[in-house]
Length: 428
Image (cartoon, rainbow, N blue to C red; front, side, top):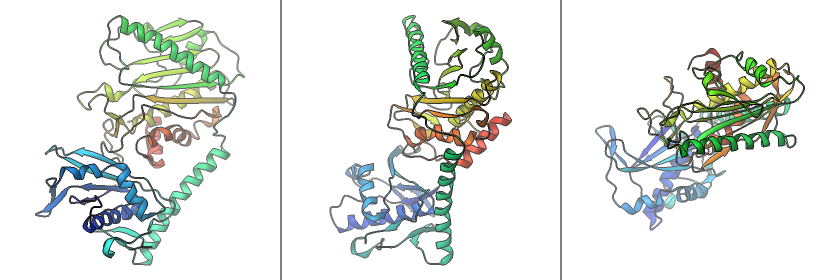
């Protein structure tokens, strides 16, 4: 992700210099949009060939660096318009606040300017700006530059089109009916969790999910001989493990117990902010899993409640989907359909980061922020024996609402494919 660095720009619209500064900022945003996305850092000066934080000349300037105001500038200059995220981020050394404008990439058509800058400076109407080495934001000048920009847009449109075709041709769908049983199962499971959670709090123990949790539910459609709860537990013991603490883990017999004809996992002796794992399984082919966030139980690496690792959800959802595929096979219903749904809570004000993996993929740390308290995926239904072959598409479909809640972030499909490849190889 490219970064454009700017000095403090007065964009308050009080006079012509301010309007020129708006065009200056717009030129950088337009060029980054055509380049594939990036960031504009505000409030720096160049000294001895290096960029250093510059003092804020007027505290009132920060009031104009908000999403509504910046996107008003984008709307004025960009055709087609697009949405930028804006963050006020403290500098790691000085502690001073600096605006960061996050410019999205992945546009299906080139972005052009639809207005002139004040006094004809910085931006010209009907001009397409790109990034050049320097870095510089300048109009396209050669056929090769046009070719690179158009190819980038065509690739994005192609990827989206292929994804849409996969949804239509491979049986991945959002069913409008036959979801009542899964919804009822999810509601009953959450009610049971709330009951046990309240008992924990009443006993004076710390709530392991006070900062948020995520859940995953799935239903294997009828078409198999229903086992007893004990027989179901035996089958679950044969599911392959992909992680050190697998989903629907049956490793700890002290955590497992029968409950109203179901299998219930409730960890014993909970205390403090530790890893939490609650699940229910029904011999009818219904499964529910609820966990807290890894991000909230590693205070030596990341402050609890502030971050959501961007890569971990791919790992977790992929493992849940593979569990559904394998349980369908073990219940002798491999060609039956599976309905799934997932939800994340406690997301407000968290930022995407990358702190769990040794290999970093592409994210600038702590830029994309969520403003919603929770996100829930649409219900998805697919044939069980197709889950493995369509795992990236399914994972992308389920995770798309989560990532979009973080300032419209779009996780590249190549990252999803690579993470799921590592999952299946048992390496992270």
